[in-house]
Each structure stands twice: as C-alpha cells, then as structure tokens.
Image 1 (tube, rainbow, N blue to C red):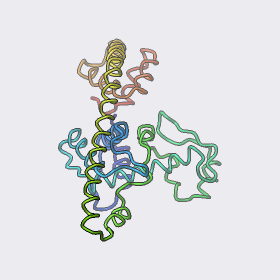
Image 2 (cartoon, rainbow, N blue to C red; image 1 turned 180 degrees about the vertical axis):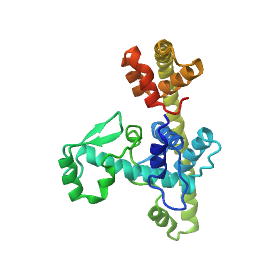
Image 3 (cartoon, rainbow, N blue to C red; image 1 turned 90 degrees about the vertical axis):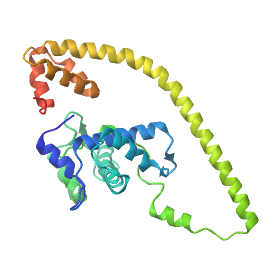
Image 4 (spheres, helix red, strand yellow; image 1 turned 90 degrees about the horizontal axis):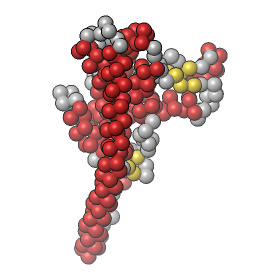
Length: 274
C-alpha cells in the first residue's frame, strides 16, 4: 500500500545515514515479505539467529520483486535488516511492557502508532529519552515483522567468524577423519532440508486448495462492493481491488463500510490511485 509523500519520505529515511541508500516504501514491504517467507521455510533458522546464506536468499527475492532496485545483500539488505530489527524491538518493548515505565500503551492498528496519554508518554520519555521519537511516529511493518523470530542475534556475526577462523592444528589422520565427518554432516543436512521441503509441499497443497476457495469468495465480495461506487472508473476499480486483496485488514474494513462512505475511504487509504 502506498502512503502520502510525507510518510514516504519519513519511512525511507528512517534509520538511514548520510551516504547510504534510501529505501522506498514498496522495497521495504517486499523485504519484510521475503523475511517472512524465509522464516516460514525453516531452512535458515538457527538457535541464535539465521544461518549463513540468509542474506543471499533475501537478495534473490528482492531481485525478483524489485528487479531494477540494484539492492545487494551487503550493505543494503543487511543494513535495512538491522534497522528494522532495532526499531521493531523498541516498538515491541514499549507495547509489551518489557522496559521500565511501559504500562498504559496500546497499538493503534489503523494508524500503525503507539497510543497513550500525554502523562504516560511524559513519564516514559523521562526514563528513556532516546525513544521520544516514537511519540506519534508510525511503524508500518510492526504486524508483518512480528512474524520474523530470532532476529536479536545473527548467526554469522563478526565474532562468530573470528571464532571459526581459529582452527587448531591437527594431524593428517585427524584431518581425514574431520573431512569424512564434514561430508556426513553435509549429507545429513541436505536430507533434513529435503524432508522439510516435502512436509512444506504437502502442507502447501492443502492450504492452496483452501486459499483458492477463500480468495474466490473475497474477490467476488470486493468486485460487488466496488461496483456500488459508481463514480470510480473501471481501471481505478481494478487497481483498488488488487490493493485490497493484498491487505486483508484493509479489505475487512472496506467491506464493513456502508456504500456511501466507501469512495471517501478508498481515496484516503490509497491517495496514489488517480
């Protein structure tokens, strides 16, 4: 979903420093989608973060969804990943009361902001001045990013690389034994990946069948509702339908409105459609 130019400027500059590439709203949305896909696959999940290769996976997905962006795993995707993680953590801690003085905050799902009385905010900022920026500020990807666990530690941090680089000396016999063990580990890992993929394929087959039926009903409901908005040209109706189908919460909100209010709602939610 596109936002106003002011919101776009705010979101693209969030966490960016001078000399770094600014991301568009669309690019960040696609990155979050790729993160969720990566987590759902389970292939790159590790005890303390993600396994080596996860950045390459995200780069491939971004090259497909944003082919002309030129986004690379390093420094672009890795940097934005860390920024999202940092912002989401602060946002989440405020809402869940994980930090001192966080009671009294609620999440405004419609406006993507944290809501609290001025007194609650004042007391909170007094204890943690550095989070004053979240007073009234939007974080569009809180719900979507909440589905990305294990983001506090990255499996291939610089410390991990240094630890792996310090290999003890060993005899030729020991080296051969280690080589054999390595091949066994790789084979076991590939078998495990194959098993995971087989399970996911079976699950996907069932879910796809269910989704096809549900999506058909949703499409019919959206088309019927948009037909009642007589002043909207057909091409704009099609664009609105596509956008609504991608955002389930907005779709539910749209269908819950009475017909006279739907056009105004669409124009406010999707100001870019003209």
